[in-house]
Amino acid sequence: MLITKTKEIGTRTFSLKCEESLELQGQFLLNLFQTTEADAGLLEDGMKIQVGWSILFVHEIGAGQVQILAPDYATDPFSRTTDDLSATLSVQLAQN
Image (cartoon, rainbow, N blue to C red; front, side):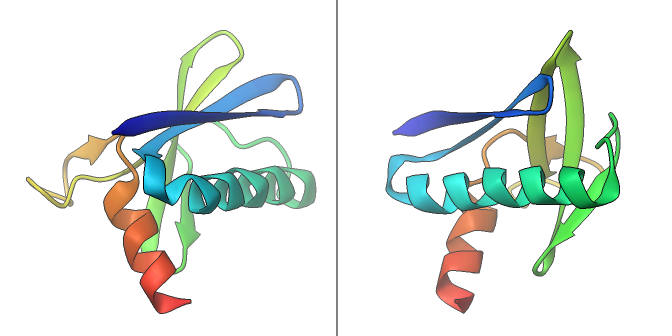
């Protein structure tokens, strides 16, 4: 079952979707985005952030709402993204 994790980062709400079993990894990723924004400045729409082996995308979906996207490995990771970060988080969990 997919869940949505959210975190207030600055003045915006960041969100991501993942399988319920990956909730802790999702929270870790949101904390990492918070640290990255604190260290590097505002994470803007369209920015790409490398996390481990994967590239994640910052996508503003509305005023104060930011979604984290991943390459869509089920179809075409070079041109498509997905809001389900389960594949990315599963691999990161296995590597740690």
